[in-house]
Image (cartoon, rainbow, N blue to C red; front, side, top):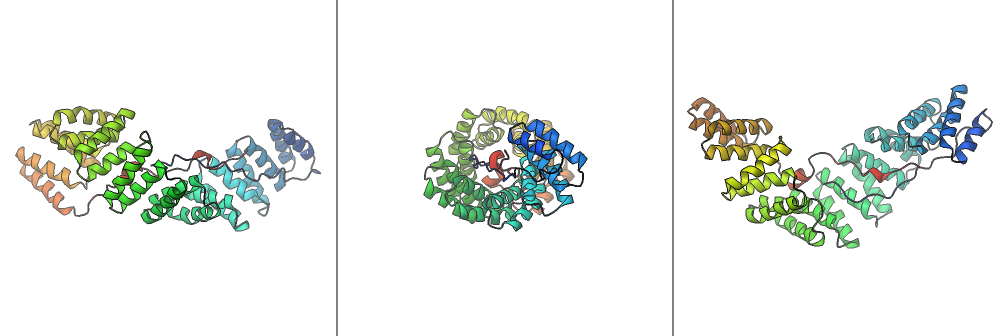
Length: 384
């Protein structure tokens, strides 16, 4: 689940200039920058750096102007050139880290931001940016101490707590996520996002009943919240409450008709409830939207096998096996199908594979709502 709340926009402490006015051309560049003529200032600073290729301050000042123009790639290059000439320039590491962050280069932002934090260990801005950079680079455990330190500085910042809770979830530290959700609910009892995050954490702890209660609260507070119906439906599906789950998946589809996961699990509910004719078109539509769904292919294979369309069933189950080679049910279904086809050796092989798989798949709600690492909100930091 991606956090919906946005951070306040940070402003880097962009120094007005690094180069001295005595350098030929620097005074004019500063005047243009002060007057708001950024293209002119950029051109002037480029002339200064050409004439003074060993002046770190000139490159740093060029980087500041480029950052203000939101030319972050060029700004980062200018900052790096300045640092290569003089690694002790004040504020350059922060500006470099921010320029990389704004490009989405989260891993590259870490080193300069760590250097900036060493220079100013109490900086709320740097702590937050560093935590968000680790978060964006999918180093969720690494992000936690920095985000936690930032939350201590601004305990009432709901947006920041929300991202910390999400980082805890991604790090599989579910109790940490629950702690943040409790704090969010103290400040805003009507936060649907907080209830949903709590539900994910509780499901991760295998406390599915409590997770359902949290999603029901979220649905009551905000029935149109993104993913709320799917999340509640999935938790009910986990609890084998298939009729109730089907209603939630349908509600999600009423809001988002092409929501592939909702199509898949609604189809699975209908198949489980012995309505294969209703399930088939849902699963076929899901496969068109998301051909990489193992469950959709498995269910289509089951429907085809039960209808004695054995070749179609074999095709679907073989696809499912390739997508999820460790799914016991796929191997068991394939074994049965091969046996029905008179292919005893293949059947024996599939049954043997099914017996050899002892570890259950991790199928928590968190995995469904967070299939990939979560990037920080785009407005988590800014350079003006």
